[in-house]
Image (cartoon, rainbow, N blue to C red):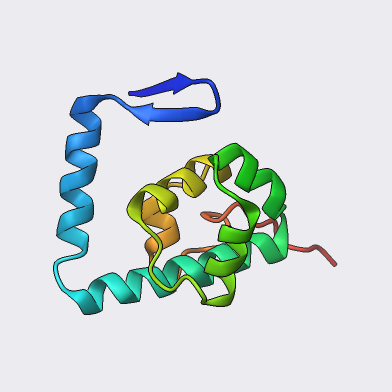
Length: 115
């Protein structure tokens, strides 16, 4: 269950613990962690190229827009789990989707252009 406290949404302790365990399992090796960070950056770029506005997402996530820009251009090559989670909540896209290798446009809330 999510708890909304102003600008921030927090997972209750039970869900946060299971989430933290999942994230630890997902980052079992340094290579896996770096791959997931690259996936996150690539998927984030797809979202921002399609529909999201960096300044709005940054404000909703409670981080500075420059931090998002650094993630997108690779100057922040390994963002923290907390930062990735805040961005995923602001985008309303599950973090698992943003960390995945090749999510669909639908999963990333990208509308297909018609005709």
